[in-house]
Image 1 (cartoon, protein in one colour):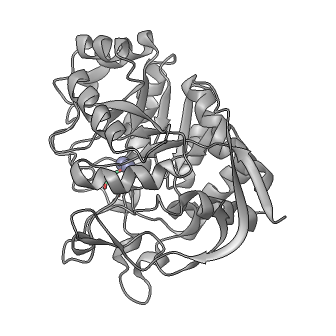
Image 2 (image 1 turned 180 degrees about the vertical axis):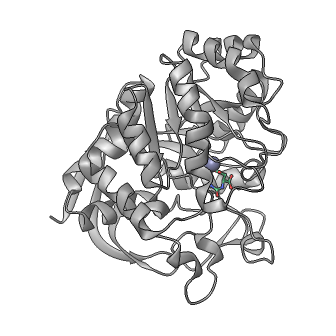
Length: 343
Ligand SMILES: NC(=O)N[C@@H](CC(=O)O)C(=O)O
Ligand SMILES: [Zn+2]
Ligand SMILES: [Zn+2]
């Protein structure tokens, strides 16, 4: 097969950041995705409907001419989020709220430290049909970083899902066999997104032969058996697993640093990299469901009307891009060849 046409995909987990960089990040995503779930971990975080609406306006302003890209906004949960905040957000068309355990990842210092105290908020979200999106890692110092996802599932997520069977929950950017098994066994109200990096790489790609900061993201890459479980999950064609790139740009000097930031800037090649993985797995016929159908269905949104075509024309991901502020950024998989290209 040399050409593959699929329903226009959506990205169900994306960081666009804010300010000048929107010109870069919005264009990169809008080149092939029609909608994206925009993560709220700005500084300060997007904790209110008003902040979300103002952020949305800045994203729309940054769209390339003629683009019909639609940002789907999310609310950042804190210890102070109230039931009224959820009602107001829902009325304004905000589709989901995001749970970051405090300190778990980039810009999560303002986030939730006492999870159970948010249960009334979760009840209201279930009532309003608002989705709960979860960065599923505990942050307790004594828990090894490679175990943080599994421990979050055991200590917190199992209980949330049990207490709120009507709440739609997306476990974001899953990295372990444990997460695949948990989501597979849960009700139809529980799903997960999977990134290109967690399908393509394991922790050897981070640590063998020198440390590779551009492969560092959170949750951190796991051992190859976990990677294989993620690959099996997408190859199964289960509707519970769908596309979320977690494209998360950080300037080059912030990645290549003594204390490097977590996040891979994958927007320029994500769809093509997913296609490559699905081809390796011999399931290119399952790419459309994963990229374009299951996420929209889970969110209760219409599937897109248009199509995008991928052609087999190998190209090289640039070594470096220049941001609108003049600073360099290194895209995910910089310098490598990709078989597929969006026409
Ligand atoms: N995935 C990452 O490694 N980083 C994300 C935050 C997140 O999604 O956890 C970021 O905002 O940089
Ligand atoms: Zn996250
Ligand atoms: Zn993310």
